[in-house]
Amino acid sequence: MCRVGEEPGPPDERAATDAAFTALLEDSAEDLYEQAPCGYLSTLMDGTIAKINDTLLGWLGLERAEVVGRMRFTDLLTVGGKLYHETHFAPLLRMQGEVHGIALEMRTAGRGRLPTLVSSTVKRGGDGEALLIRTTVFDASDRRAYEAELLRRRREAEQARAEAERAHARAEAALRQAETDRQRLTEALSALQQSLVPSSLPAVPGLETAVYYHTASPDLLGGDFYDLFPVGGGRWAFFLGDVCGKGPEAASLTSLTRYTLRAAALHDPEPAAALRTLNAVLHEHYTAAGDPRYCTVVFGLLEQAEDGRVGVKVASGGHPPSLILRADGDSEFLPTPGGLLVGVLPEAPFTTATTVLAPGDTLLLYTDGLTEARTGPTREGLFGDEALLAFAADQAPATPRGLVEALTVLLKGFGDGLEDDTALLALGVSAARPTTDPAADAP
Amino acid sequence: MNLSIEQRDTATGPVLHLVGDLDYEQAPRLRRHLDTLVLRVGHCLLMDLSGLEFCDSSGITALLTAHGQARTAGAAFALAAVPPRTLRLLSIVGLDQVLTIRPHTDAPAR
Image (tube, rainbow over all chains, first blue to last red; front, side, top):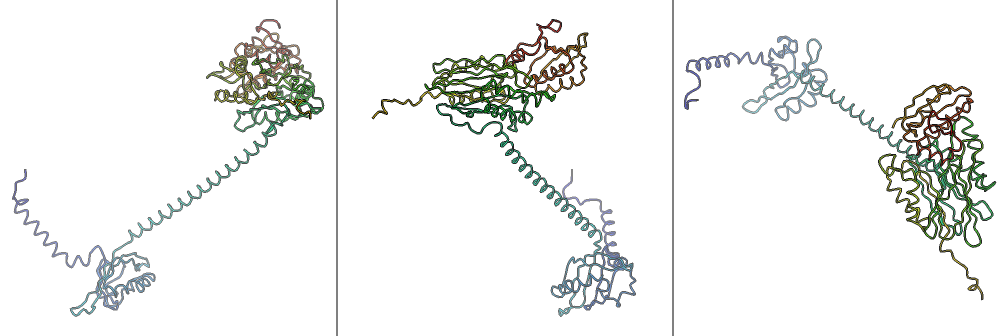
């Protein structure tokens, strides 16, 4: 515990400390001036050096005899220092009577340079007349080096920042370029896709049509295709199919298939004949060349009868059977068994089937994207033919548009389960066909 | 599921036992294996599909490649132990009428 009111330390010790402190003060008066850790000098008002300490003489490498009364303050400065003294230091000193911490460069005997920080005050007499100038000089070498280092670091940092900015600019330019390329590619793919499927189906008198097209591939290029076009004599041809493979590779086959079928149909619209031509072309082009590729396709011909009904003749090459939704609510497959994949063998059998569509009947063609869609997490649970037939039975009777809309909702429900490209083409005879009453036309 | 292919050479020719999926991703394995296959005239290339989990159109293409390769070599080609789903697919595309299909690897063609 500290006792209140007691002086710190014993009396003897205190006396000894005081004595040493006094001696230090007395001893240092002259010594402090000469050996101070800074330079001192006093000059007359014209700059002639009247007094200078050992420290500064030592820094400059000069003898007292050559300096005092012989040199002016400015003689100690470098050319740059002189200039700055002339233009800034001296005028400020004259104006204010004192200046502080001005950086001036001094010249040393070894032709070196000494960066210093200089402060001066003007000493005045009793009448205010300026008598002399007292100056202190601090060695600023370390500080200069520090500042130079700071400056260097700052320049480096600025360079690094500039470099980073340039890199950033380059990255942004690359990103813009990539975006431009992506845009161009998307446009090109979109244009290419138009060569695989028509952008819209032609209007066929007395017939209603609807389509759905989904590409599983992100580049929009699918292996599914369909078309509907006139072949003369009031007849229309249609087809829908699926080529093997996916993406761009499949797309070239899709394109070849579509245009071959169109050309073949103009020559001979008989469904089996069109498929035989396609088979010969694909087999010659791919399989015979050691690169087996094929497609499955349903090709059909529509012929409108006088009574408004439409005769349909389809041939299938390895494609799942078409589906018919009758106006009376029945639904059935239109089987085409035994039709072979198109392009596999030089001579392939194709099966033809016929039916008649009455007003309100709808024919649906689809690719296996629909029947192979996964309804569960594994490939075990596929949608399948039976489920499709059951779905159709629920929908019948249905217009092509209504049926495709219902199937679109169904497909969307599969989400990720829709792994393959999917195409739907529905053709129906308009139920509300305008009937012409001959009696009404009579005058 | 990855496709594994096990080859067994018999007196009548090679038997390829396919286990796993034969789809777009895995079909190239079969194609690569076919590249290494040596077929003699009069031999039969038999594809044992008893372990096949899944087969899609790319798988069909690979099987057709094998079929074509056998024909070119003057060898026969047959599928054996085809799972029902794949058999249904083959029947839709009409290949059941064209390819030889056996119930088992050691059974004669049906």
